[in-house]
Image (cartoon, rainbow, N blue to C red):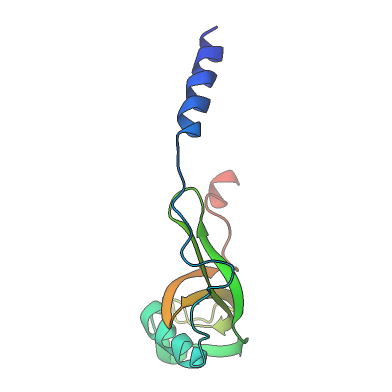
Length: 126
């Protein structure tokens, strides 16, 4: 009986969570980032330990995308810039090709996602 009551309260609490409204709309992705290569260069300088060692293998043209986490921060309509790089790690060796997604709205970098990284907790399950 306790488990039924516990499940009821969990569902009740989850039902009360509201999501923030999205920024923009399906027709409002912000201005197209014509200078997307400069945005990628700034991101490299801010992100990598040794920005001079980064080899940019591929930068694709920006495409419309929805960015965010709907249950915590809400969603934002923006542009996605796919980037492939090869950079040195802390030991001085190259890591190999890594794919990143950069999310940009009105010339501002909202965030990046390393698509080559293992999911959180991956090494704990081994």
